[in-house]
Image 1 (cartoon, rainbow, N blue to C red):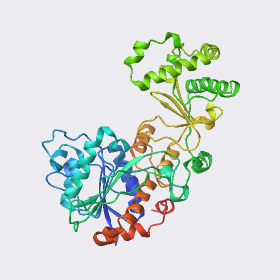
Image 2: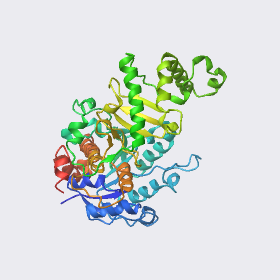
Image 3: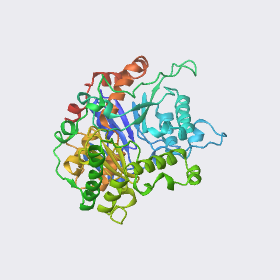
Image 4: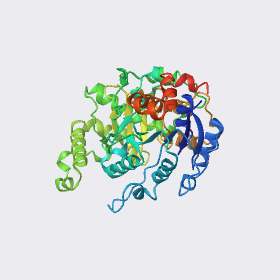
Length: 438
């Protein structure tokens, strides 16, 4: 008999792919983005459009289940100190998750969020989440578990995408005798089975794997910007025998050191004043070439907006810009080695594969998230699709985390959720083949 699960903040179904691939049956899904919910229903056959605040309030309409998963939004909790546990989370979507947990007591809870959840600005929220789950009778580590699909080798379903996410695993543990009897951490944030993430190769692991139906070509102006910076990179690295520096090159701040205003520098954050000084010294060393180059390419005109006058070089010894993977960001152009891609985000600022002179396609983005090859976005607008993919969870990352949960917390799960444990442990090591047959 299959274990059951509920899929909260379901998106387009990354969690669903992993759990159904392991033999689970979804008994409830909820997603308040209508477009995403429609894609979820078309691919998984389950009505997902709804409002968790209506279904999980003082009355819980969510059915009984074995596993609860949620890629939940993290809203700020109160820091007044007057309230504790569930009361402090009231008014946040995490409170609605807790209401379901309080009522249904699933055997396993797996929550996913951005890495920033465990950053210094969210320490309070993190502590409240852990404390609240423990108060409901769950063993949960206070150590964050962080994982990314680029740390998995290809034969385990890994993907060439850096996508670090925090996973919170909570296991029902009614026999826990003391408050200190909590769960040991999942130590995830490292390459698996000796895999070297630098061995990712976009030609082999993405471009030759996916049959792209539509190419997202660059505009003439985008090609102009890249050609300009490409000449810059080649001149600096080849002709001048000088490796491009690792700090961001800010074209609007290329002035001679003697013209820097020390009083103004002292008012700035240390990181920014440091960058300005480094850029000034770099300009002094290469002034003749830079002056000719900026004039040739109309660098200080409307043809080059401020965000395109910045280059962040993370491509190490790559010889030219067209051989890198680029990302046009509001803060500038970032160039990386053509190994793995940066995180897919919920906007259409997708990565540019330099050698192909195009952005990644929808099919490639879906592959980076580990979705099945048959997954369809119908005739949806491209912007909506990239938003959904950028908001999604990577299937193989979830799969691997579940595998680690089954081994790390084997004893507790064997007592409280043997059906779930058996399904996870008997699943193959990679999700790819099995989810493509769902």
